Image (cartoon, rainbow, N blue to C red; front, side, top):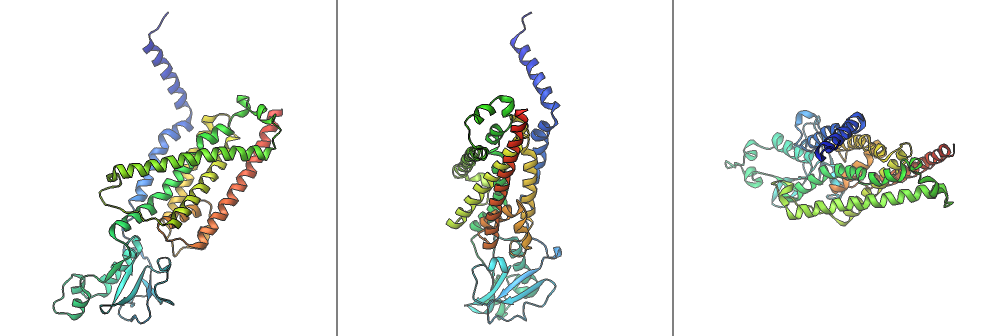
Length: 381
């Protein structure tokens, strides 16, 4: 009996869909993960509002020599202050939320604040609300010489509105983008190079070359890493082209991304190291799977772990965090990406992160070599 092509298409489609939904891992990866991942991403990105005083943030204020402290520093429960050892140290954004500096136009100090950091903005607004005369806060002089001298605003932001918006955007989005790209881009190559070789019959020809086992692992890692890095670069170039062709894709607010050479170099090394690390993890995991499809399902737990690390880093204040976070796996990488994106790099954190990335990769290579040896022993049996 001859059936129509539409009937055959329907039968095959129904059969394949049944097989797809019969595998809970496929359902989790294809349907459940997007429902969790992207709402979490947008929830984090929407959480950059200025913190309120009721959240009990402690503001660290720097005073230039000669700035009087009695007018501003009365609430020790909210504010701590110290005099600068040298005028405006280069890393003051990591040590202080705002700095009170001399005003060439008069005796009233200026508040220097980082308008790309929510806590710095909050500290600036708190000082204005708590300690300035009400007519100054409202922009009225009423004959008050202090109000005339200070004007409606005594703050001096570090960046223009466009630069501040660009820095805040990069600090929020880059850790998420780097982790998503470094996990998903090398996955197809890593899964194909490591999973199901015994079942496909490609293991014996590889071993017949008499290549050392560690060399085989490093060769697979190199191939998958290069393919993954090329894919990551293609995605980034595509995003850059899209932002240039249709700048409105970034929103109505105009943004400038003034990345320095050191920032680009550090971000490039972090992205490369992160991609190689996840490639090594995926190759190791691929040795315990029996098909490429099964290996690719490993993206879900890796994405969940990666997003957890990024979320933890996003909730840490760069300058006033515990040293331990620089040594927590994946969290330290996400934190270093955030620091580099905001141009608030801490040398000790960056150095520790690079060292740990090397350690992680070496551990994964060692583990992969042992798992490959175990796979060979099973194949011999």
